Amino acid sequence: MKISNQQKNGIIQLAFLIVVSLALLCISKVLPSPSSQFTINPEIQSELDKQKLAFEEKKKQNFKKFYVNSINDYIGYKLGLNTHQIDCLLTYFDSGKLVYTSKQFKEITTLSDTQFRAIENKLLFPEKRRKTKKKSHKKYKNKFHSSKKFDLNIITALQLEKELKLPQFIAARIVKFRKLLKGYKNMEEIEKVYSILPYQTERIKKYCYIK
Image 1: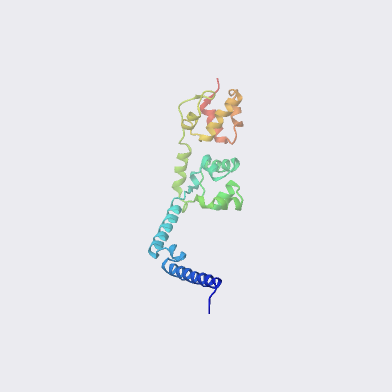
Image 2: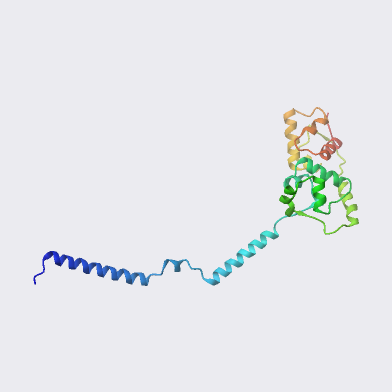
């Protein structure tokens, strides 16, 4: 039986396809599967898990809490309290009293339950009441004293912060407001500084003057 040229070409093509298929099959067996390329060694995975846990633990330890009876206007501002809430808290401290419970804190600052829950994990309360703490707080209350007097229209923001122990952002606002007014004309104008608290205005009136 004589084979035509067309039949010969068909046989050659079929043979070629068989050879290529066998070659691909062999290559697939030799090369690693994609999943094996991304498999992590169990020991390495265990070490990574330990490092992750250590990082989370360190993060928890570094989380800063504020002792509730040491809150000042700056810390109150950082906690998100408004000027009225800060003023209520500082007035309570100025009377020589301390806060011992979350209930007291909410009542004094007039915080709602929702507002208190937002900052509760940032507050540190005393473990128990101690009579001696009241005396130490009075010392802290009367700790500030200055023998100097300052011209309110000359004093710098740094002096307000260092000499009169005012928060940096309040000191900056006092100087900025002074520029806006082109100099303070009377001491009552200091009360118009944004977010300034009563005890801060009293301190300025006591230790500053206007020529």
